Image (cartoon, rainbow, N blue to C red):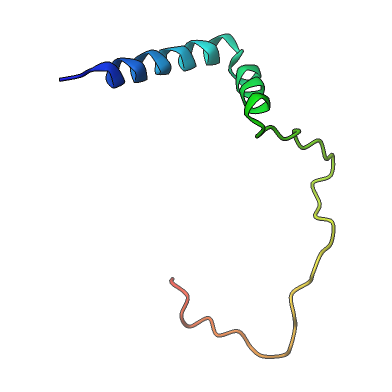
Length: 70
């Protein structure tokens, strides 16, 4: 039985774990994403509020809560 894929996955998992432990995994993944064209800039927005807010509609119809679990 060919165990090449098994050993490949084991080595790849060890590399990922070591790079994550050393704190260099994120930079390596960013460089890889840039190389294949998938990189997007990180979100740097400072606000936590959405750009607009739509309040719930109050149409005067009572809410049926008899189906709610107790």
